[in-house]
Structure formats: structure tokens, C-alpha cells
Amino acid sequence: MAQNPEIQIAYPADFNAFLGNAAAVEHLRTAIAAGRFPHALILSGPAGAGKYTLALMLAMAIECERQPRDLWSNGQSLAGFCGVCRNCTRIATAFALDDEIDKAVAAREELRETDKKETRVLIQPHPDVLIIPPDPPQLLIKLGQVRTLIHSANYLPGEAPRKIFILTASSFMKEAANSLLKVLEEPPATVHIILLSENPGELLPTIRSRAALVRLGALPVEEIEMLLSDRRPDVPPKQRTLIARLAQGAAGRALGFDLATYTAARADAMLLLRQATQEPDHTVLFKMTETYRAGAEGQQKTADLLRTLTLLLEDVLLIQSGTPELVRNTDLRAELDRIAQTVSFQWIEQASRALDQVWSGMRRNLLRSLSLDAFAGQLATATR
Image (cartoon, rainbow, N blue to C red):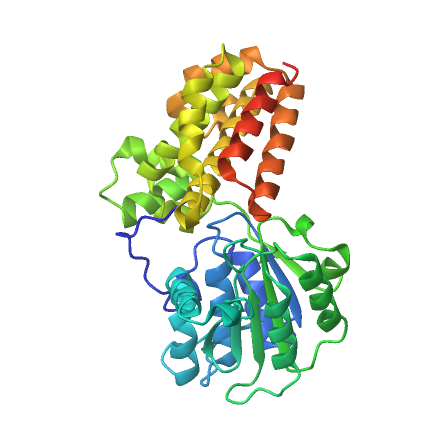
């Protein structure tokens, strides 16, 4: 979901600023302090759980020139970072990842047409730290990016103790995933690869088997509400409760949640569901899907719509399964109850599969409006 540009999230001063998942964070800090941090690590968790923030904090702890340590009463040593040395400050510039990606994409647009095709988006805040995001417009990690990682990994670090590579998603092109597997099989001794994933199941089994896995769990709704009350006092209590549920336990997502953008996407998502469960008005439907045609803005809008649809379908399933207290879109409860009474579990299952097909079409750059029209048609004809 789009982040509100007016909300500024400060860079963490130390590990105490990381919200939730204390046991997982302590385990990783202990591994760094003991020199046992894995050569390959998968950090998994929902969007907004803090995977990228934690990955950069771990990179700072590994590369920090001062190597500060916290000691527990049992004598256990936990790695930290000073935040002020040359290595820490350079790595910290990458916390604003979206801004850095925008700069990289803009720089690529200035190149000659022939050079654009060979240039991949890479973020390098430090000579020994390379961040690899999904490459626009397909938003997949591509072969050229992984080749850059492999080439760099074969050289010793120049200004820090280790070389660190952070891949910010698990959406790989097939050739890129196969190439990454080669470096994971025999990683150089000075290299750490951190792979962020909302769903590790998307990764090749051979990649998963060669990396340690740490999961970041969801925070309780009540804890998210308290966080919003403290950090975003401008949000009214009713909206705070709604955002806390929609954030799905992810602190970062809650703090940056743009409720206006979400409700706009949800209005279109509800239109699709109404068209599927009532007498369809194709004129209204086609008029809506036409607004999802092309460009980066259309891509973001489509992604917001699909995520919102997923939440709505999950809410309908929660109502059907007898756990309505877990519903996220609480302000639409009455209409979701009506939909839950008119569709079957098989219908929800078919709708979820059709939704996966739309996501797949986005990755292949298919015309979005046609994909959504096809999706609406599948919903209307699915077995209720």
C-alpha cells in the first residue's frame, strides 16, 4: 500500500528502536557478536514488518568501525552499531530506499536507448554494501543484477570487514534465481547475502535449503494502536483502530499507512466483488478498469487494488469460518456479512487463484485493464 509522503519515519539510532520480534533480533545480534552470522539469511515477514530496516541495521552492526557491544546479565554479548562512524553513516543513507530507487531509475532514463536495456537498478550506499531491489517496470530481480552481485562477491571488501548484499524481494526471474544459487553453494568467506521475502515459498527450494531463515511475526493489534497513538496523534481513534487492523501486525506499515489511498482502492475492490455477487453492470465495471491502464502510477494503483482485494476475500473467509472478530475491514462488516452469505468456500478459492493470475500478468506486463476485466469475468462465473 502506498505510503503517505508527509509522514517522516526517523532512522533508528540503535536496535532498541526496532519494534517487536525481540527474540529474533537478539538471536541475530548474538550471531554477529560471536562471528557466526550466516553467509546467507532469509528474513521473512509481512510487508511493513521491518525486514528492510532490520537488514540495514544488521549491515551497520557488521560493518561498524567501533563495534559496540551490549551485555546481558548472563554475559551474552549482543552486537550493536555506533551510527556515527563513516561506515554506519554511509549505509544509513539507504534507509530512504524508495528515494534511492527513484534516483537510480531517473539516472537510467538519461542514458542512450541502447544503454538503458543493459543497465539495472542497484543501490550502493557503501563500497562493500550493495542493495538489489526488483527492477522496474516488471519489478523482478533480474539476471544482470545477480551477475553484478556475483562479480562483486569475488573480490575482497575494500573499506569494511565484510561484503553485504541485500536483495529486497523474492520475486526473481528464473535465470536470476539459478545464478544466485551458484554463489550460495560456495559463498566466499567474506560475503553475507540477506534476502527479504514476504513469502519464502516463492524461492527455489534449493535457495531456501542453503540459507538460514528468520521470521518476523506480527505485533498484536493493541500494540499497533498504542504505537499509532504515540507516533501519529493526528489520526482519530476510529481510524487508528482501522489502520491497526489493516496493518496486519506490521509496525512500519501502520506508521506509514495512507488510509485515503487504501479506501480509494477498496472502493474499486468492492465494486468488483459487488459485480461478481449481484447482477453485473458491465458499463460501470469497464469504466472503472479503464483507469488502470499503463505507466508506473497505474502499476502502483493496480498493486494497491490487488492487495485490497486479498484482504477483503480473507475477511469474507474469516466470517464464514466463524472468526469475525479477526476481520480487518471492520467498517464494512455489514456488507462483508452479506457477501459471506452468498458465496461458498470454493468461490473464494477460485477468486484467490484468479487473483494470482492477475499478479502473474502484471509481472509479464500484460494490459492491466484487460487482466482486471478477465478477473471480474472469472468471479462472476465461479461456482458460488
